[in-house]
Image (cartoon, rainbow, N blue to C red):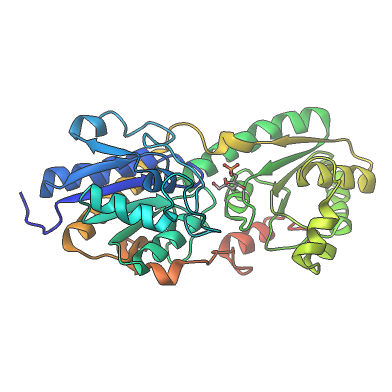
Length: 361
Ligand code: F6P
């Protein structure tokens, strides 16, 4: 057994779930237990459980058989302890006071949180409050700064690509425009990767505001070239160029009363502009559910194991990040409150343009 001053840690998962969370929990917990003899407290339902004191000790058996399981065995929530904090009506405690009490009650030496931008931002605030915290990056959106990739992203790309492949055959049979709406409110990584992998004729991302006329022109050209069917991949955060100039408030107003989500609007606009029949598929939560891909299993294991070694070394206040082939600790302050957008000169965008995909600009 290797030596560490750390005796007990808490683990929680917070925010939207993603395939690979359980794999990362397994990597983290097994390494802590087997290599360092560290005790694990599993905290239920994210930061809500941390506030409510909802947690219990978990042993090696609890982390067995979960490598391939989707979701999170710990449960999750979108509770944000620092957002409009209110005292608990029964105890009178503010969320941060309750968290500190529970941290003490469980004798925690550190807390490991697995989550997206919001989760790691909260982790940074907890570190500022004096807790020993380590973050692990998980989101199918892949929009966390300072890390090349996040847990769950590649599985979601696989799922979305398979859906696009399936839509291709039916688009071809009926000579239709098939619009597929994917997740990604703030960043278009999922739309870009699955759009390129699935040969999307049009790929609309939040980073590149679209003009209906440019897309319609592209689709009409395809028809003239003997391809009267097309695949249009739309990230849920896609927006028109006119909308890109609006303030947050004006944007919200502009979307009020819109029938269906953005994919439906794009389909209506394209049908009107081209006269081509259009259909919409919204992939939704299928992108988040189910077993992690082999890539995500390896990635999540590596993230979990690396986090365990950081715990044992007392390397706190950091998020584990993948940089090239290495896993490194990045100060949570550098991650907090930021979103990793797709750069407009990303090689995948340039390559997609070169093979004829239209980004609507
Ligand atoms: O996991 C990130 C994400 O999938 C976003 O792309 C999406 O907008 C959001 O979660 C929706 O999740 P929920 O409905 O669980 O809040």
